[in-house]
Every structure is written in structure tokens, then in C-alpha cells.
Image (cartoon, rainbow, N blue to C red):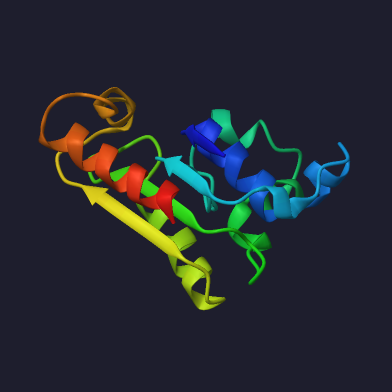
Length: 144
């Protein structure tokens, strides 16, 4: 599974909380890995009023955070995050990597200096140093 921003969040939630896949008759073991770009995996406390309005209550917000569902059975993750991302803070990816490592799961985190939230998705496939770095990391992750 792969995604950017909210897409990375959804991919991570599918990979960590088996209820979503099981409801559709899909075994959690079918997910072999997650590639997340600037994902909000651990976004509490919610500081934005607009974002807070999405969640009914604190329990609902907690249940939407992939970090709370990480287990040794969680598949490996490769995450990228720009250090200049002011929409989804890099601490989201750092926390996810820490939670994965704590249960002994493979967690690769690539932090990119001078990279914002939107710039990250546009860097994929680009023929420059950052684009090649992303391509090499993704190819290596998929090969394992």
C-alpha cells in the first residue's frame, strides 16, 4: 500500500488495524508493506479547529491513529517526510517509525531537508538528486 498525506494515513490504518480489511474479506497478511509520504500517523493533539471538527470525540480521534494499532504483525514501512512540512509535522513519521521499531518491525524513515508537504509528492520520479533518492529507496524497499 502507498499514499501521500491522507492517502498515507489510510494506507497505514489499513495495514495496522485489521478491522478495515477483514470487513471486506481481505486477510491482513496480504498487505506486505506500506510506503508513506508525509502521513499523519500520530496527529494528536489536534491543534487546527477545522481538523478537530472532523472527529466526534477524543476516542474517535485516537481510533483514527495508526500508531495505536502497531503490533509485531504490522508489515514493514518505508516513510518519507519533508523537514519543512508545516501541514503534517515530521514528528508523525518519526513517531510511527519509533512505534514500529519498538515491536521489532522494519521501519525506514527518510527525512528530507528543505522539503515541504506538497513538494514531496512532486519529487517522485523527478530526475534530480531527491527524485533519484526516492526512487532508489522505493525500489530497494520493494525488492525486500
